[in-house]
Length: 449
Ligand SMILES: Cc1cc2nc3c(=O)[nH]c(=O)nc-3n(C[C@H](O)[C@H](O)[C@H](O)COP(=O)(O)OP(=O)(O)OC[C@H]3O[C@@H](n4cnc5c(N)ncnc54)[C@H](O)[C@@H]3O)c2cc1C
Image 1: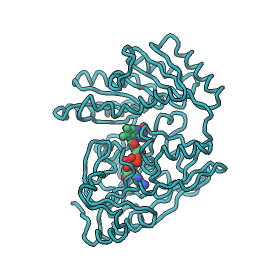
Image 2: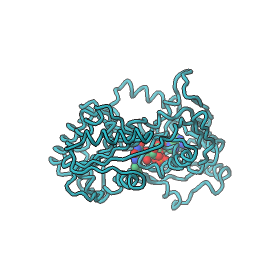
Image 3: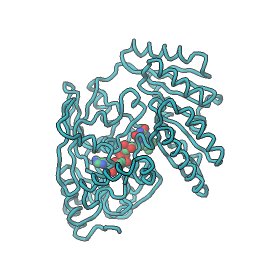
């Protein structure tokens, strides 16, 4: 049953936010989408500017019983920031101040609407570094990154968002403001509620302030692109490099479908690896040299790049998702993770299943940590076939001891598959947790569970 915004709620929100409360349908449409392709128009949008406003909105949500959906930049691929029940979208993009950068403590404190790239730039000016780098880092927000536990190419060496969140100011459903976690590099006092909230997809609390661990900026970086005549050789060459004690910051893979969609100029190349190394210049040079040596005789093409040229190669990688649009009006986009040793077998099986159904499947991504983006591309009339193929691929992932999502999360588009991975006792504990945080079920309803 839909719980609508009452007249009293609208009046109170108008009083509180004035022109930052949007009710016109045209204005609401701008908050009706994400990168999943789904569209769900909210009844209204709130643009708070501070914690107190967020708290008052969540208090009102409990008094007047209307749903609230938190939103950052709306780049999720799962429908997670959409409002399927209507109600209010709570967009945090105006809470975008970098509150503190502390080089002595290696800590940064930000509001949730700070865009990842802006934080990276501000830190770099101080010789510091925030590693999590989703391909959307130029436009996604730190709040959204924390809520999805975003990863990225550098996850291989540096881990994911979870590994950098020290503390959170969080507003609970009902409006209570909590300060969780620490601003020290360690802390084990009580249950780790901060970690519980990271990756909770806006279903348990709204983050209004985030304390992050940061690192010294690596002084040097180098990229190595290695092209192979087939996908399998690319994946086994990557295994060879990583099992010989070389630890790149990133090891990304692009399959033949992806390469053709991005218009990669080397036509004979059907599998590409992009490595990034960082650290002191001498270490970067040594890693590049060792990797070249390990790849010798196996590649169709090998290119070392620095600075703007390297950035150009990484831009091709970041542009994959939009480039794939030309291969199908619709897609099922999953970001599965497999034990690295099973990647090659997995890809072969995906090719077999794709040939059986006649559908195009693109596989690319953070192969270094076993995280592959699997995109089934299709025209609307092929949806039933695409759905069956997706189910087969997801079952295969679980058979191979993998997980259904490494970084994009569950949102709306994957919740039907949750019971395939999480056992019933785990699911009921998750439902209990949701009830404990949000007894009325008003914060980002319909998501995850
Ligand atoms: C081209 C492209 C490439 C991408 N590449 C990657 C990638 O490499 N790695 C990766 O991990 N993801 C990637 N993504 C997915 C997406 O960018 C990430 O999930 C990102 O973290 C979402 O941030 P956002 O600000 O857009 O959040 P939104 O999409 O607006 O919201 C995402 C979730 O966070 C919740 N949320 C937002 N702000 C808050 C808050 N302050 N408090 C509580 N909950 C909140 C929302 O309710 C929702 O559940 C990519 C997306 C695109 C379009």
